Length: 140
Image (tube, rainbow, N blue to C red; front, side, top):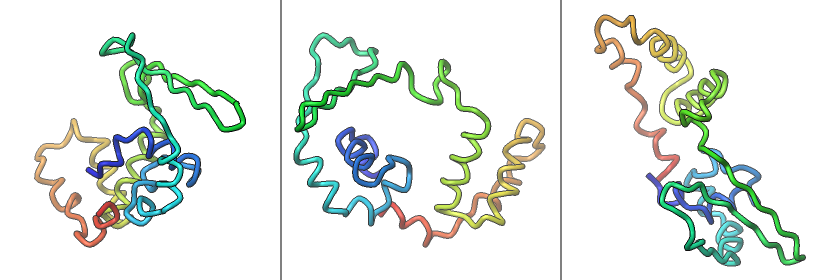
């Protein structure tokens, strides 16, 4: 896992510079973008000492022009409280699969996973999961 994947400063900078903090924002060439470092270098992060371990954080951005924006996501997408919709799950699968396997391989894998509870032998997944090692370099 790239260290940037759990970095709030990186995610905020990617959203500002690249207009997305999605998976492609974490590709090696994107992480090397000097504009991201420039934005992160201007950030100051502080933690509210009153927060309890399971509290959801409020992120407040204060811009140079004095504008202040605060946002809090009550529960992460994909949690029991905020389950992902089927279309979002499919889109995330396709984005992740495109990083390591061909589309012709991803479609049968998706169909097999959709019927996983009826699969008699999980070894049927092996050939569908065998990706191209050269495609994984997107995060290196």
